[in-house]
Image: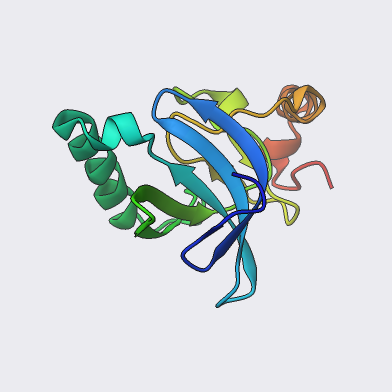
Length: 145
């Protein structure tokens, strides 16, 4: 998939995989920004229940607008490949909500990441976040700065 173009998104890196597909970093050539693409496996696209779940997730995310929730930019299909276009948040994504699944962006904003999917080995970042939380840095509002 790396090096391939889906619609106007140039796929540059595999971020992770999970129960609902694979996630890739891609460059949006129209808007000049990096995004995350969550690809629904072709076998899931043929399964009406899984396809409906994928579409429900997209609609749910589209209805949310909060600084601390990763944004969805669109639902696309290119060459029979269905995918979500999501805000790229550097870090890992989760299967359930817990402190390890909340990332702190470079500007200090906490972000709850989308879905059940992005998996990336960022143990050091996770340890730093846990350390900040234990030290009370987040409660002080300075996010470790």
